[in-house]
Length: 626
Image (cartoon, rainbow, N blue to C red; front, side):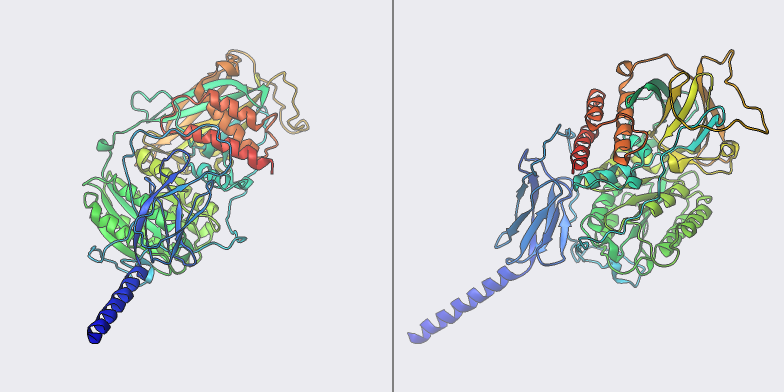
C-alpha cells in the first residue's frame, strides 16, 4: 500500500514537472491589436518581449504572431497610444486594445470599405522551400525577426541641405527651368516625426514632395501625349496681394492587365542596421503586398546584402507567390552594409533577364546606411548613371529611423530613373505598392522638364515653391542628354509659382543697372495679356529624342474663394510646408489658416489621406507650441 502511494506521488510529481516545463517552453502567441477608442485594427504596432530582442509588428489588419514563453511579458507600443504590457501565462491568443493619448482629434481618417489584403509576418515552418546563393548568415531560413532598440540619444540621420528658392526679377531672369518630381518620401517621413511629437528637420521638408503626395482631379490626356497640362491662377493664401500659379500634369493611366511584362529584382538591405520592427519586419510585410500584384508573365528575383551580397531567389514567375513570399519571410538582419556590391549584383541579374519592351526595374529597400565598398554619394551617383542607360530603372523604398540616410536614397532614385518613397507603416506600403502600383513601377515618360518664361509687363517677381534640388540650367531644357524626372502610369505632378504682380509694393532685391548691355524694359504689345508661357519636354520610356508641349497662362483675377479644390488643397499643403520650414516667405501663414483652407478643399477623400493631413496640421501646431 505504501509502495502504491509512493508510486502515485512520483507520477504526480513527474506530471507537474512536465506540465511546468511545457508551460515554460516557447510557443507561438498571436492576436489582434485594436484601438480602444473605435475598435478598429491598428497596423504598425511594435510587439516585443520585454528584456529580450525578439519582436514583430502588426500587419494591415492589426494581427501579429510572436514566439514567447509563459513567464514572458509582451510590450505593445505605437506612437500616439498608451503602451501596454501583458504577461503571457498559459495564453496562446492575446488580443489587445490600446488607448489613444490625450490629443484632440480634428477628424477621423476615412477607412476603405474593404481591406483587400491582410499580411501576417508570422514564422515560416521548417518545410518551407527556398534556395540561397550566399554564405552569410543574413538570410537564415526559419529565423524570426529581431528587435534591436536604437540608443535613445543617438541620431545620425542625413538630409541634403535645402535653401528656399528666392524671388527673381523676370527682366534679369526671364526663365525658370526644373525637372519634375513625383517622389513623396518627404511627406511620410514628416508624418513619422509629427506622430512621434517631434518637429521634422527643416531639410527633411521638401515642399514639392508634400504637394505631390496627393492625387488631384486633373483632366486626363487626349491623343498621343502621355500627360495633360492643367493650369490655374488665383490669390496666394499667405499674401493676398500676390498671385499663385498652379501647374498640374496628369499622366495617362494604363490598366494593370495592359501593362508590359516586368523583370523586377528586389534588392533588400538585411544588414544589422535593419534590426528593428519598423525596418526588416515592415519591409517583409510591404514586399508581400507587392508580390501579390505580380502576374504570371512577371519575373521576380531577390538579392540581399549585409557583410556581402548574394542571390536568395533566382528569377521566378509572379504566379508562384508562395515561393517568393517564402524566400522573403526567411530573411534575418545582421552584419555590415555592402550596399555597393548589392547594387552591382542586382543590376547584373536584371540585365541577364532583361525583357525587351518590358518593365525592367530594381526595387531597393533600405535605411540608406551604406558603409562598405561604394559608399560616397558621388561614387554611388556615377554607378547608377552608368547602369540606367541599359534600360533598367530604380525604385527606392526607405525604412526606419535613427540612422536614416535620406540624402543618399534621394540621389539613387533620381539618378536611376525611378522614384523614392518612405514606408513608415503598412498603410503607406499599401498606398505605394498596391493603390499606386502602376505609377510606382511603370514609367510612361522620362526626362520630363518644365521651363517657364515670365512676362515682365505683368510679373514684377516670381518664385518657384519647392523643387530646390530639381532646378536645371536654362540650357539644359533643350539638351536631350540631360537627365530629368520620370512620370509613371496615372501619376499627377503639381508645381506652384508665387507671383508678385507689377504695381504691388515689394522688396525683392535691388540690383544696379548693367554697364555693358542694354537694361531691358518690360515688354508691351500683343502678348501683354499673357502672364507666362509654360513649355515641357519629355521622352518616351525607350526613347532618346524629346518632344515639346507648350501652353500660355492668363490671369483672370480669380479670387481664392472661387478657385478649385485642386488649387486650394495644393496651396494649403505648400503653406504647411513653409510653416514647418519656418520659411522667410511664409508671409502671414499660420496653422489655423492652413486648417481652414484644407478643410474647404478636402473634396472626395476615399482613402482618408486628406483627413490624415488635417491631423498632421494639428500635430504640427501642437509641436510648434513646445
